[in-house]
Every structure is written in C-alpha cells, then in structure tokens.
Image (cartoon, rainbow over all chains, first blue to last red):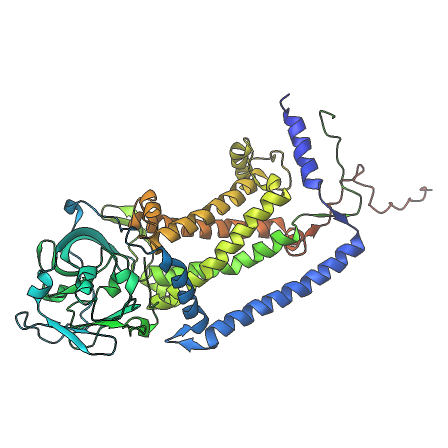
Amino acid sequence: MSETPDERADRLRAEALDAPTISEPEFRTRSRRAFLVTGAAAIAGVAGWQYLKLGPQDAGIPRLLRNSHEFNEAMWEPLISPDRLAPTFPRSAATMVRLNGMIGLRSPLDPATWQMRVLGPDSTLLDVMDLDDVKRLPKVEMTTELKCIEGWSTITHWAGARFSDFAALFATRVPQNLPYVGLATPDGAYTVGMDMASMMHPQTLLAYEMMGAPLTGPHGAPLRLVTPVKYGVKHLKRIGTVRFMAQRPQDFWADRGYDWYIGH
Amino acid sequence: MPETPPPVVPAAGRAVQKHPRAVRWMHWINFPLLAIMIWSGLLIYWAYDPYRIGWGETTLFEFFPGWFYEALGLTRQLAKGMAYHFFFAWLFLINGVLYVLYTAVSGEWRHLVPDRHALAESVQVALHDVGVRKELPPQGRYNAAQRVSYSAVILMGAGSILTGLAIWKPTTLAWLTALLGGYQSARTIHFILTVLYVLFFVVHVAQVVRAGLPNFWSMVMGYERPEPAPTADPFADAPAAPVSPDPS
C-alpha cells in the first residue's frame, strides 16, 4: 500500500525523533565537555598548521609535504608501464607549443657543431653524438598533449627517436637496472632528472621535429626531450648531456620546490 | 505490523541526539581540509587562470581579477600549492570515504538521502526561506533542501576526487581523463565544483546563522533541547491581573 501524505509526514517526524535522548543535567555535562574538546581540537589543528608553516622547510616547502611527494611517487610509479600509453590525437588537432622558458638556451648555438655527450654513472664519457647519429635510430612520430605544470596544455606533433632505442646502444656499457637518467643543457643551466621507467616509456622521445619541421632554437633545437608521462618542465630543450645514473639526478625545478617526480 | 506508525512525541524535557559523534568529527575535520584544498587550488589555478563568465568579447566576471590574488596573497606559489594540494587531497579523500561508509552502515543515510518528493519540496523550502511561502513541507531531521544539498555536496566531493585524479595522472588514468572530456575539460569541471563549494558554504553559513545558536551547537555537542511545546492557553504564563476592588 502506498503511503498517504499524512503517513509520510508522520513517518518523517518519527524518523527525526528516533534517536537517543539525554536528560537536562546530562545535556549540560556533555555541552561543557564538547566545549573543552572542541577547543582542544581547534588548538591542536592550529598548532599543526603552524608546525607545517614554521617547521622544517625544504626549498620553501614544508618538509612533510615534500616527503609526501615521494609517497605519491612510490604509489604511482609502479603503474607506469610501456603498455600504458598517453592518448594520441589526430594530427589535425596539433598546434605549436607556446614558448614558456629560455633557461639554458641563452648562449648562442651553432646547430652544425652541436654535440651531445653521453655519460655513464661514474661520469665516464661513453659517446659524443651529433644529430645524424640520433637520426639513424628509428624515427617515431606522435601527436600527444603536452601539459604544462601551470595548467595549460597543447596537442602537438613530435618526431624523434625513442629514448629506449637510444639507451639500447649503451646496454652493454652501462650497468643493468640503473634507476635514473639526468639531462642537462650544454651550459648546464637547466637540468632534468628522470626515473628510468619513464625514460624507457615508448612515448619518451629524443625529439628533433615539431609540427613536421626541425625544432627551432627557442623550442630546443636541435634535440629535446619529449615525454607525455611528465609535465612540460621535464621536456628539456637543447640536450647537451645525457647521463645514466645510480643516484637521483639534480633537477632545476625540484631545486625550486617542485616535486622531483612530477609524473602523469 | 501497524500500517501507520504510532504518533511519536519527544520525551518531555529530554534533549534529542541530532548528529552522531562520528558525523560531527568528520564535518568539522572537513571544514579546514576543504579550506586548505581551495586555498592551495587557487595557488595552482593562479598559474593559468583562463576561466570567466561571459560570451564572445563580453566578460561579466573573470576568475579572478588581479586584486583578488593580491588581496589573498595567492601569487607565485605554484610549487607550494601543489605540495599542499597533493598532501591534503589524501586526507580529504579519506575523510569523505569514511563519512560515506559511516552514513551507509549506521543508517544515518535515511536522514540524508533525498526521496522522490525531495526535489519539488526543496523548491518549496527555498520559497519559504525567502519569505514567499508560508508553510514548510513535511520533513524529518533535515528538510528537503538540506537533504538535496547535503547529498549533492558528497557527490561533488566524489567529482572533485575523480576530476582531480584525471588532471593529476592523465596518462596513467587516461581512460578517466577521456571519460571526463579530456584534460582541459576535467580541469574546468574541477574548477566549477570548487565554485559550487563556495556557494554551498555561503548558503550553509547563512542558514546556520538563521537557525540560531542551539542548532549550531548541536553540530558541536550532538544534542538539541526540544523546542518548548506550544501551550494551549496563551495567557497561562501571564501574571494574574490584580483584582480591582469593587468600586464603592
């Protein structure tokens, strides 16, 4: 039988009163206790907040929060896999990426004499490569979305060599299972530290073309890192040095308070 | 089983529990957590703040004018905003999940989940609250507008978590980002939900002020004294008028 409006009103009233009750003296006791507990909790909350703001800091960020970046990293990194690809888009959706930083690009560059140094974990020079050496690796093209840490994003067409193909050239000359790769501009002004899982991702490229044309100077000519598993800050332009590393490499933006890992 | 429940009268003189302890704790913990999430979210949003209300060349309101960031000290702290946001998001998530589990298991959800009349009745409640309508529709512990908004804000919380994950991990969770219309779409929804929290907060605080101190205090200590029953004789409490002596 369906409920009449009056029955519903009665039921609702009954529901509201279907709860424990206490006497007036008990009400006063609980009221006083709640006042003290609330006060103590509020003081504890403010104290915790002050500790965050005034306690140990690391590049202007509370250390507890920086450590939580590493908790987040430990949680998400196992999910980075060669099978888990960033979405790709039709090439018609691609546009040029906006220019958003010239750090490491201020010195003049002669693309003809540019060379990339490849270092092992102990800084031994493994190779010095020019652009033709990189171009001899299989060319990969992809249209992916570059996400800037600021929040904007751009779908762009890239072409270059997979870092995994590049790394295979040195497979016999560097220890297996090194966890990191460090990259730097020729002047060393901009550095990027990367975890190996993200570097070996099939969409992580040593890119030399954007929108079907060789990279322009401000976009990182002649060779830059492109990796849709990281924010734009990791897309180091004008690569000067690549080093396979055992320790976590220095990173320009991590030194300035950003999450080192900053993965997607 | 009787088809109509017997009329229930509040036990005379006894205060009735309105908010169980767990709900009170989670409510008050959520308040600073959400404030921190919105503040740190604004530190992040400042770095790329394209949203506005308007059409074509006409802008009615931009999110946000420069003075807003300056007045609240929100400029140039992207790294800090991200650090706070990705730490406190976990606490926000845990608190929200515990709240949903608690209300589901304890049966509290019966007071909160809207029934099929709730949407129409919440309009009536709103009309009453702005003074257009005299009567309130029947209600339990919460009126229909409260049921709708308190349930909606939980769904909004779930929406914030999902859109947040979609913009935090758009490669690992590419399916989620795609489901939400892509990276920029997920970011826009994430932002709109935040605006809705602020609107919720404004109305919520206004209603709490209107409802008065005993109602507010019941959210802190849990119980509310029964309202005094209307007396049958409105003059019962009036002091007896002195009997004037017979004029003589």
